[in-house]
Length: 339
Ligand code: PBG
Image 1 (cartoon, rainbow, N blue to C red):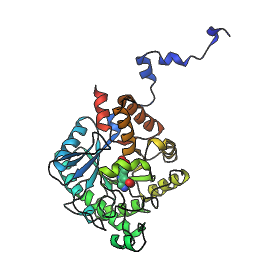
Image 2 (cartoon, protein in one colour):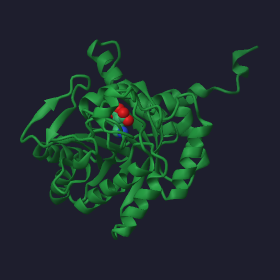
Image 3 (cartoon, protein in one colour):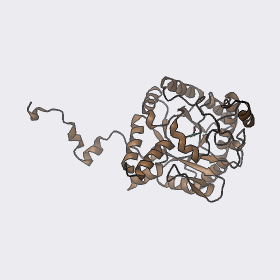
Image 4 (cartoon, rainbow, N blue to C red):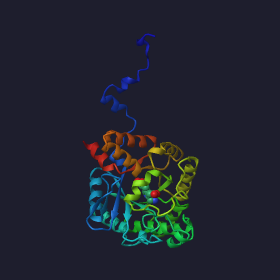
């Protein structure tokens, strides 16, 4: 064959940065990102999280500063996680008026009224046993009677989740994000919010959350590791996708405003299928702590170029169908976009 007979030459559209930019199908902008922040009661500290370089547990004043920096970079929203001063079997600080998150929300909304505040609604950071709900027995009983895994009670936990969501919304949260994979959590929270006159507050549901090994660093950051057992009685088996669509369908029926798939990178197929099956709802994906830690560790060793790796990761997540990406890289990425 004579080479001049070639009719299809896709390389023509890759010939220069200008042409490549013209045909680029997916672009991640700062407006797509949500930045997670870990807040502690302790005054004026920034305690580094070893497994998440660049991320800290922050006192409330510093969390406000961090949120302000994110906003200044064009990031529209932060996602707050709290480290309580005391933990008990019932996770009581999670819905306390002067709980760490409630205080942080009030402070952030006062200083940065236009920044969207999203809050994680779960018990795991607040219970002394580290589980995402109330257990069928006190934590003391659990160790001596052989109930070593303690089952997370479902309907009893729903009442607490609704209380937490209402307390966050009353403090000023714009969006609440239940993350515990408790059956009926979206419906219970919607009813709780509406009953309290908070129908304006949206629910971003961690609709499809897998029992993932990639949450390891987060559990150091939020001090929320289960003291015994694991989360496989409520989080999903990484092997399943049909079940994922079922989970999402229930959350849509119960009134979720935004769906989420978590983690992101190992579940791009799930993101894509969720996007296709539920085209009418915004879809978020959580680029979790372990995904962040992998990139940071490889970059620190100069095994990967951080900027191009992060750009590729976030682009892939958006290309798969996510409208919003929760990522610890948010501030860095937004900074690179400006340079
Ligand atoms: C709480 C919660 C977890 C994460 C977000 N909310 C931990 C877990 O379920 O064990 C993980 C986030 C991350 O790894 O970045 N239920």
